[in-house]
Image (cartoon, rainbow, N blue to C red):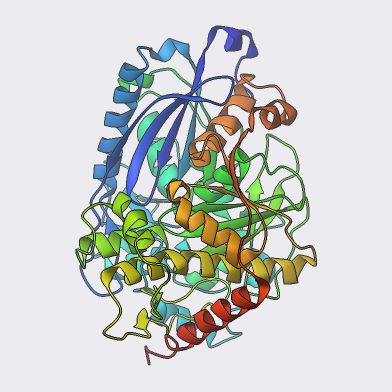
Length: 505
């Protein structure tokens, strides 16, 4: 269902709500794809036990309302000038709430959380971690939502009985926000549903075999809808009252859409809390033999979906936060570039941030982080440089896997996300890849992609070519490292990674 096009010309903005792992942002975007005002607020990260990562979903909803109001105030605008709302969100993070009260029954289990590894092992005993790959495109992993749902149903007192009675609702953060914004609509989009281990990639619906395997009642789950279309009208937030919600994309699919990677073979890499490489594979799912996952890239209205291959890296930007918050090596994240640039190299040290195991392309939950190659020569500056290099090396790994799967080498890498302002990192990334790295003018493409999906549904934008015309290059880094040095650096990185494996029995 498309929103009324007759009002589109009177509206000046799309509002994008970008609900991320560490913060929530509201961004007003105009017809040129330019952010005109924004507001952002961090939420607390809870680590109650080793391997556990939790959020307070109520805090996130409160923050969402706050940043929406701030963004509108900073733009000196009101809801009647907004054509539609787009939502993008941290994927896989899991919330269960009471349908009657709208209150969560437990903290949200975040995508990085590894508490469900025993259930993963139990399920993998029959068919291995590839057991459900053909239907879902995903390996069995704590990363995805299904085991998190099952854990909550089993561990929260009375939850399973209440779920089977239809009293509870599950959602990733998009569903949670829509429920609150609309006061009770329970929906998600295909991109978020494709990250649960419960949706069939071909039918785009919840799969009975998968629901039975994880022992999850269908009544718990939201309705799956296309990424661009009708997601209800806001009634639960006065600042956006009566504005339609017309776009939802998981954060990495949103960044891909914002980078206008609409054609098969086009790719982007986002540098955020983690790193995520997505390569558009067209209207048919392509299954990796090299450690990547298959996911839905987007679906516009009633059209066929586009699929993607994805390389998911758990820890990149959050490694910088760890240096700041846990070790005190820096006082703010922005200091890391200057500290790393104060030395010529990593001093022989390598930092592999396998804090919750390794995701793509290795999928080793038994790994844990290591700092190796230490001598008395190594300083905090060398460690800072090793941290940045870890991001680039992990990206090299997933790109090598993507090239092996597709048989098509990348000729350049489009990048986005908060870390791409770090020019030392971007140059090193080009060096270890041996191809140019290209940053667009708008680097927060996650919010932009959600806005594009919403604006296509309201008629704010008419077609994909109009969105392509908005994309503009800001900076390009050319590789300056020789092939022999590149190979040797990568060999030492792999040597360091080998030291992480098998730490957890």
